Image (tube, rainbow, N blue to C red; front, side, top):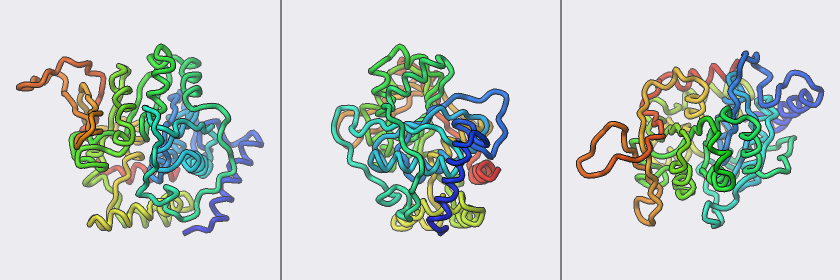
Length: 351
Protein backbone atom coordinates (compact mmCIF):
# COMPACT_ATOMS: atom_id res chain seq x y z
CA UNK A 1 0.00 0.00 0.00
CA UNK A 2 1.23 3.46 -0.83
CA UNK A 3 1.90 5.67 2.12
CA UNK A 4 -0.77 8.05 3.37
CA UNK A 5 1.55 10.96 2.62
CA UNK A 6 1.79 9.85 -1.00
CA UNK A 7 -1.97 10.07 -1.51
CA UNK A 8 -2.14 13.38 0.35
CA UNK A 9 0.65 14.76 -1.82
CA UNK A 10 -1.23 13.85 -4.98
CA UNK A 11 -4.37 15.55 -3.69
CA UNK A 12 -2.48 18.66 -2.58
CA UNK A 13 -0.85 19.07 -5.98
CA UNK A 14 -4.24 18.93 -7.65
CA UNK A 15 -5.70 21.51 -5.30
CA UNK A 16 -2.70 23.82 -5.60
CA UNK A 17 -2.85 23.63 -9.39
CA UNK A 18 -6.51 24.54 -9.37
CA UNK A 19 -5.92 27.45 -6.99
CA UNK A 20 -3.15 28.76 -9.21
CA UNK A 21 -5.50 28.78 -12.19
CA UNK A 22 -3.68 26.36 -14.47
CA UNK A 23 -3.63 22.66 -15.44
CA UNK A 24 -7.14 21.87 -14.22
CA UNK A 25 -10.41 22.60 -15.96
CA UNK A 26 -13.50 22.49 -13.76
CA UNK A 27 -14.83 18.96 -13.74
CA UNK A 28 -12.02 17.75 -15.99
CA UNK A 29 -8.80 15.89 -15.38
CA UNK A 30 -5.50 17.62 -16.02
CA UNK A 31 -4.25 14.53 -17.83
CA UNK A 32 -6.38 14.90 -20.96
CA UNK A 33 -6.81 17.32 -23.79
CA UNK A 34 -10.23 18.91 -23.92
CA UNK A 35 -12.29 17.78 -26.93
CA UNK A 36 -14.26 20.24 -29.04
CA UNK A 37 -17.57 19.35 -27.39
CA UNK A 38 -17.89 17.70 -23.99
CA UNK A 39 -21.03 16.14 -22.54
CA UNK A 40 -22.39 17.86 -19.44
CA UNK A 41 -22.89 15.35 -16.61
CA UNK A 42 -23.81 15.16 -12.95
CA UNK A 43 -22.66 12.05 -11.10
CA UNK A 44 -24.92 10.86 -8.26
CA UNK A 45 -23.15 8.44 -5.93
CA UNK A 46 -23.01 6.75 -2.54
CA UNK A 47 -19.23 6.55 -2.92
CA UNK A 48 -17.86 3.17 -2.03
CA UNK A 49 -14.73 1.85 -3.70
CA UNK A 50 -16.52 0.95 -6.93
CA UNK A 51 -18.06 4.43 -7.11
CA UNK A 52 -14.64 6.00 -6.46
CA UNK A 53 -13.08 4.02 -9.29
CA UNK A 54 -15.93 5.19 -11.54
CA UNK A 55 -15.34 8.81 -10.54
CA UNK A 56 -11.65 8.43 -11.43
CA UNK A 57 -12.65 6.98 -14.81
CA UNK A 58 -15.06 9.86 -15.46
CA UNK A 59 -12.43 12.44 -14.52
CA UNK A 60 -9.98 10.72 -16.86
CA UNK A 61 -12.38 10.80 -19.82
CA UNK A 62 -12.19 13.90 -22.03
CA UNK A 63 -15.70 13.26 -23.33
CA UNK A 64 -17.21 14.43 -20.04
CA UNK A 65 -17.58 17.79 -18.35
CA UNK A 66 -18.38 16.87 -14.74
CA UNK A 67 -20.55 19.77 -13.60
CA UNK A 68 -20.83 18.36 -10.11
CA UNK A 69 -21.04 15.26 -7.93
CA UNK A 70 -24.01 14.67 -5.63
CA UNK A 71 -23.77 12.15 -2.81
CA UNK A 72 -26.17 10.25 -0.59
CA UNK A 73 -26.25 7.48 1.97
CA UNK A 74 -25.91 3.94 0.64
CA UNK A 75 -22.58 2.17 0.86
CA UNK A 76 -21.50 4.56 3.62
CA UNK A 77 -22.94 7.45 5.64
CA UNK A 78 -23.36 10.86 4.08
CA UNK A 79 -20.19 12.51 5.39
CA UNK A 80 -18.06 9.51 4.42
CA UNK A 81 -19.63 9.40 0.95
CA UNK A 82 -18.74 13.06 0.46
CA UNK A 83 -15.17 12.64 1.68
CA UNK A 84 -14.66 9.54 -0.48
CA UNK A 85 -15.88 11.45 -3.53
CA UNK A 86 -13.60 14.40 -2.80
CA UNK A 87 -10.59 12.14 -2.35
CA UNK A 88 -11.20 10.24 -5.58
CA UNK A 89 -11.69 13.43 -7.59
CA UNK A 90 -8.58 15.03 -6.13
CA UNK A 91 -6.53 11.95 -6.94
CA UNK A 92 -7.70 12.25 -10.55
CA UNK A 93 -6.86 15.97 -10.63
CA UNK A 94 -10.51 17.02 -10.92
CA UNK A 95 -12.06 19.91 -9.00
CA UNK A 96 -15.76 19.24 -9.68
CA UNK A 97 -17.89 20.45 -6.75
CA UNK A 98 -19.42 17.90 -4.37
CA UNK A 99 -22.87 18.36 -2.79
CA UNK A 100 -24.49 16.40 0.02
CA UNK A 101 -27.96 14.98 -0.58
CA UNK A 102 -30.20 12.38 1.04
CA UNK A 103 -29.46 10.96 4.48
CA UNK A 104 -32.92 9.36 4.55
CA UNK A 105 -34.75 7.23 2.04
CA UNK A 106 -37.57 8.45 -0.21
CA UNK A 107 -40.23 7.82 2.43
CA UNK A 108 -38.28 9.65 5.14
CA UNK A 109 -36.79 6.73 7.03
CA UNK A 110 -33.18 6.89 8.13
CA UNK A 111 -30.97 4.82 5.84
CA UNK A 112 -28.54 2.49 7.57
CA UNK A 113 -25.40 2.43 5.46
CA UNK A 114 -24.08 -1.00 4.54
CA UNK A 115 -20.83 -1.72 2.76
CA UNK A 116 -18.95 -4.79 1.69
CA UNK A 117 -16.03 -2.41 1.04
CA UNK A 118 -15.17 -1.90 4.73
CA UNK A 119 -16.46 0.57 7.30
CA UNK A 120 -15.20 3.56 5.29
CA UNK A 121 -16.32 2.06 1.97
CA UNK A 122 -12.72 2.19 0.75
CA UNK A 123 -11.07 -0.94 2.11
CA UNK A 124 -10.30 0.45 5.60
CA UNK A 125 -6.79 1.36 4.40
CA UNK A 126 -6.79 4.96 5.73
CA UNK A 127 -6.88 6.34 2.18
CA UNK A 128 -9.38 9.15 2.63
CA UNK A 129 -7.93 12.51 3.60
CA UNK A 130 -9.27 15.06 1.09
CA UNK A 131 -8.06 18.63 1.08
CA UNK A 132 -11.25 20.07 -0.40
CA UNK A 133 -14.63 20.48 1.27
CA UNK A 134 -18.21 19.95 0.17
CA UNK A 135 -20.31 22.82 -1.12
CA UNK A 136 -22.85 24.53 1.13
CA UNK A 137 -25.84 23.90 -1.15
CA UNK A 138 -28.14 20.90 -1.26
CA UNK A 139 -27.69 18.17 -3.87
CA UNK A 140 -31.29 18.34 -5.11
CA UNK A 141 -31.12 22.11 -5.57
CA UNK A 142 -27.81 21.75 -7.41
CA UNK A 143 -29.32 19.20 -9.78
CA UNK A 144 -32.31 21.42 -10.52
CA UNK A 145 -30.27 24.63 -10.89
CA UNK A 146 -27.86 22.90 -13.27
CA UNK A 147 -30.59 21.42 -15.46
CA UNK A 148 -32.28 24.84 -15.60
CA UNK A 149 -29.01 26.36 -16.73
CA UNK A 150 -28.47 23.72 -19.44
CA UNK A 151 -31.94 22.45 -20.44
CA UNK A 152 -31.83 19.36 -22.62
CA UNK A 153 -28.06 18.98 -22.20
CA UNK A 154 -27.43 17.45 -18.77
CA UNK A 155 -27.00 13.69 -18.30
CA UNK A 156 -27.23 12.26 -14.79
CA UNK A 157 -25.05 9.23 -14.05
CA UNK A 158 -26.60 7.44 -11.08
CA UNK A 159 -24.26 4.90 -9.47
CA UNK A 160 -26.05 4.80 -6.11
CA UNK A 161 -29.65 4.69 -4.89
CA UNK A 162 -32.11 6.97 -6.73
CA UNK A 163 -33.18 9.06 -3.71
CA UNK A 164 -31.69 12.40 -4.78
CA UNK A 165 -33.12 12.00 -8.29
CA UNK A 166 -36.59 11.10 -7.03
CA UNK A 167 -36.66 14.14 -4.72
CA UNK A 168 -35.61 16.39 -7.59
CA UNK A 169 -38.46 14.99 -9.70
CA UNK A 170 -40.91 15.73 -6.90
CA UNK A 171 -39.62 19.23 -6.23
CA UNK A 172 -39.57 20.45 -9.83
CA UNK A 173 -40.92 17.91 -12.34
CA UNK A 174 -40.93 20.37 -15.24
CA UNK A 175 -37.21 21.00 -14.84
CA UNK A 176 -36.41 17.30 -14.50
CA UNK A 177 -38.20 16.64 -17.78
CA UNK A 178 -35.32 18.60 -19.36
CA UNK A 179 -32.73 16.00 -18.30
CA UNK A 180 -31.21 14.54 -21.46
CA UNK A 181 -30.58 11.04 -20.08
CA UNK A 182 -30.38 9.23 -16.76
CA UNK A 183 -27.76 6.49 -16.74
CA UNK A 184 -28.44 4.01 -13.94
CA UNK A 185 -26.15 1.36 -12.54
CA UNK A 186 -28.99 -0.53 -10.95
CA UNK A 187 -31.23 -3.60 -11.04
CA UNK A 188 -30.14 -7.17 -11.59
CA UNK A 189 -30.73 -6.73 -15.31
CA UNK A 190 -31.88 -10.10 -16.59
CA UNK A 191 -29.84 -12.02 -14.00
CA UNK A 192 -29.74 -12.63 -10.22
CA UNK A 193 -29.46 -9.92 -7.58
CA UNK A 194 -26.90 -9.29 -4.86
CA UNK A 195 -28.94 -7.65 -2.08
CA UNK A 196 -31.40 -10.55 -2.40
CA UNK A 197 -31.64 -13.35 -4.98
CA UNK A 198 -33.71 -11.01 -7.21
CA UNK A 199 -32.81 -7.46 -6.13
CA UNK A 200 -29.70 -5.35 -6.68
CA UNK A 201 -28.26 -3.20 -3.86
CA UNK A 202 -28.86 0.29 -5.30
CA UNK A 203 -32.52 -0.47 -6.01
CA UNK A 204 -33.09 -2.42 -2.79
CA UNK A 205 -31.65 0.46 -0.74
CA UNK A 206 -34.54 2.69 -1.85
CA UNK A 207 -36.98 0.87 -4.11
CA UNK A 208 -39.71 3.57 -3.89
CA UNK A 209 -37.20 6.15 -5.18
CA UNK A 210 -36.16 3.86 -8.02
CA UNK A 211 -39.82 3.30 -8.91
CA UNK A 212 -40.40 7.06 -8.95
CA UNK A 213 -37.46 7.51 -11.32
CA UNK A 214 -38.64 4.77 -13.68
CA UNK A 215 -42.29 5.90 -13.67
CA UNK A 216 -41.42 9.58 -14.25
CA UNK A 217 -41.08 9.04 -18.01
CA UNK A 218 -37.63 10.52 -18.64
CA UNK A 219 -35.26 8.42 -20.78
CA UNK A 220 -33.26 6.02 -18.63
CA UNK A 221 -30.44 3.69 -19.65
CA UNK A 222 -29.98 0.81 -17.20
CA UNK A 223 -26.79 -1.19 -16.76
CA UNK A 224 -27.56 -4.14 -14.49
CA UNK A 225 -25.54 -6.59 -12.44
CA UNK A 226 -25.68 -9.17 -15.22
CA UNK A 227 -23.28 -7.04 -17.28
CA UNK A 228 -20.62 -7.25 -14.54
CA UNK A 229 -20.24 -11.01 -14.21
CA UNK A 230 -18.19 -13.59 -16.08
CA UNK A 231 -15.41 -12.12 -18.23
CA UNK A 232 -16.21 -8.62 -16.93
CA UNK A 233 -15.00 -9.43 -13.41
CA UNK A 234 -11.61 -8.09 -12.36
CA UNK A 235 -9.04 -10.76 -11.50
CA UNK A 236 -6.19 -10.84 -8.99
CA UNK A 237 -3.80 -10.53 -11.91
CA UNK A 238 -5.51 -7.38 -13.12
CA UNK A 239 -5.46 -5.86 -9.64
CA UNK A 240 -1.73 -6.59 -9.50
CA UNK A 241 -1.36 -4.75 -12.80
CA UNK A 242 -3.30 -1.81 -11.39
CA UNK A 243 -1.27 -1.78 -8.21
CA UNK A 244 2.03 -1.66 -10.09
CA UNK A 245 0.89 1.12 -12.46
CA UNK A 246 1.30 4.03 -10.05
CA UNK A 247 -0.47 5.88 -7.25
CA UNK A 248 -3.92 5.92 -8.84
CA UNK A 249 -3.89 2.20 -9.56
CA UNK A 250 -2.58 1.43 -6.10
CA UNK A 251 -5.31 3.58 -4.55
CA UNK A 252 -8.01 1.69 -6.47
CA UNK A 253 -6.49 -1.68 -5.60
CA UNK A 254 -6.27 -0.85 -1.89
CA UNK A 255 -9.86 0.40 -1.84
CA UNK A 256 -11.12 -2.98 -3.12
CA UNK A 257 -9.31 -5.06 -0.49
CA UNK A 258 -12.36 -5.67 1.73
CA UNK A 259 -14.58 -6.51 -1.24
CA UNK A 260 -12.07 -9.08 -2.42
CA UNK A 261 -12.12 -10.63 1.05
CA UNK A 262 -15.93 -10.67 0.95
CA UNK A 263 -15.97 -12.43 -2.42
CA UNK A 264 -13.42 -14.97 -1.20
CA UNK A 265 -15.64 -15.68 1.82
CA UNK A 266 -18.51 -16.39 -0.57
CA UNK A 267 -16.40 -18.90 -2.45
CA UNK A 268 -15.43 -16.62 -5.36
CA UNK A 269 -11.66 -16.49 -5.13
CA UNK A 270 -9.62 -14.46 -7.60
CA UNK A 271 -12.25 -12.21 -9.20
CA UNK A 272 -14.72 -9.49 -8.19
CA UNK A 273 -17.36 -7.29 -9.82
CA UNK A 274 -16.80 -3.58 -10.37
CA UNK A 275 -20.20 -2.56 -11.71
CA UNK A 276 -20.03 1.21 -11.24
CA UNK A 277 -16.95 1.60 -13.39
CA UNK A 278 -18.47 -0.70 -16.00
CA UNK A 279 -21.56 1.52 -16.08
CA UNK A 280 -19.33 4.60 -16.40
CA UNK A 281 -17.49 2.99 -19.30
CA UNK A 282 -20.85 2.49 -21.02
CA UNK A 283 -21.40 6.25 -20.67
CA UNK A 284 -18.03 7.43 -21.96
CA UNK A 285 -17.43 4.77 -24.64
CA UNK A 286 -20.55 3.85 -26.67
CA UNK A 287 -18.60 1.19 -28.58
CA UNK A 288 -18.32 -0.76 -25.32
CA UNK A 289 -22.07 -1.45 -25.49
CA UNK A 290 -22.77 -4.28 -27.93
CA UNK A 291 -26.51 -4.72 -27.52
CA UNK A 292 -29.48 -3.13 -25.76
CA UNK A 293 -33.29 -3.43 -25.79
CA UNK A 294 -36.11 -0.96 -25.18
CA UNK A 295 -38.26 -1.88 -22.20
CA UNK A 296 -40.96 -0.87 -19.81
CA UNK A 297 -39.45 -1.36 -16.35
CA UNK A 298 -41.51 -2.06 -13.23
CA UNK A 299 -39.99 -1.83 -9.75
CA UNK A 300 -41.54 -3.93 -6.98
CA UNK A 301 -42.05 -1.96 -3.75
CA UNK A 302 -44.45 -4.29 -1.95
CA UNK A 303 -42.89 -5.91 1.15
CA UNK A 304 -41.77 -9.48 0.68
CA UNK A 305 -39.24 -11.64 -1.10
CA UNK A 306 -39.45 -9.69 -4.38
CA UNK A 307 -38.98 -6.21 -2.85
CA UNK A 308 -36.56 -4.23 -4.99
CA UNK A 309 -36.84 -6.48 -8.03
CA UNK A 310 -37.14 -4.70 -11.37
CA UNK A 311 -39.08 -6.51 -14.10
CA UNK A 312 -38.37 -5.61 -17.73
CA UNK A 313 -41.07 -5.84 -20.41
CA UNK A 314 -39.37 -5.83 -23.80
CA UNK A 315 -40.86 -3.54 -26.43
CA UNK A 316 -42.61 -5.40 -29.24
CA UNK A 317 -42.85 -8.65 -27.26
CA UNK A 318 -46.22 -10.21 -26.43
CA UNK A 319 -46.52 -12.18 -23.20
CA UNK A 320 -49.07 -14.94 -22.71
CA UNK A 321 -50.81 -13.25 -19.79
CA UNK A 322 -49.03 -10.06 -18.70
CA UNK A 323 -49.88 -6.76 -20.40
CA UNK A 324 -47.03 -4.95 -22.16
CA UNK A 325 -48.61 -1.58 -22.81
CA UNK A 326 -46.49 0.55 -20.47
CA UNK A 327 -44.17 3.35 -21.55
CA UNK A 328 -41.03 1.77 -23.02
CA UNK A 329 -38.70 4.57 -21.91
CA UNK A 330 -35.93 2.36 -20.50
CA UNK A 331 -32.96 1.19 -22.55
CA UNK A 332 -31.60 -1.97 -20.95
CA UNK A 333 -28.00 -2.82 -21.81
CA UNK A 334 -27.88 -6.55 -22.51
CA UNK A 335 -24.35 -7.07 -23.86
CA UNK A 336 -21.00 -5.34 -23.47
CA UNK A 337 -17.43 -6.10 -24.57
CA UNK A 338 -16.88 -7.88 -21.27
CA UNK A 339 -13.44 -9.26 -22.04
CA UNK A 340 -12.21 -5.76 -22.94
CA UNK A 341 -13.57 -4.06 -19.82
CA UNK A 342 -10.45 -3.96 -17.68
CA UNK A 343 -8.10 -3.03 -20.53
CA UNK A 344 -10.34 -0.16 -21.65
CA UNK A 345 -10.61 1.09 -18.07
CA UNK A 346 -6.87 0.78 -17.47
CA UNK A 347 -5.99 2.61 -20.68
CA UNK A 348 -8.19 5.57 -19.80
CA UNK A 349 -6.96 6.09 -16.25
CA UNK A 350 -3.35 5.73 -17.43
CA UNK A 351 -3.55 8.51 -20.04
